Amino acid sequence: MSDSCCSNSSNIMLLACSGASNLGQIANQTAVQLTHDGFGRMFCLAAIGAHINNFVKSAKDAPQILVLDGCQVGCAKKLLEHCDVPPDRYLIVSDLGIDKLMTVNWDQKQVDGVKAAARKCYESVVDASGSADFPKCACGEAKGN
Image: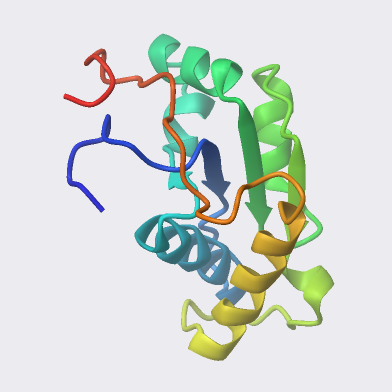
């Protein structure tokens, strides 16, 4: 994956919880690894929540948004609702049978399971390569620079 935020990537915006439990860290690590795998691109949930205009606009303009929340509290989804940014897919890590522990440690096997569930959310939406141009970017650069 390119270091440029405006390089070609999947058109799925990944917005993940990064809460102070294993579930939040699993959600965050899932988004990181999916981005490295070329399946979607992680985006700054905090900047959207801070109402930074370019980030909110980018989220509203995103063709597809996958929200990864750690638990049923649903902080990431609630933040987006507050900003009038509707996700088109929503995944809760605890719904996959992973217990919430008050630790920031995570297990790769659990992350792999969440990655598989995230991919399954888009089986009929993403082509076999899983990549396409991401049309908008909050940095202000033209796509591909």
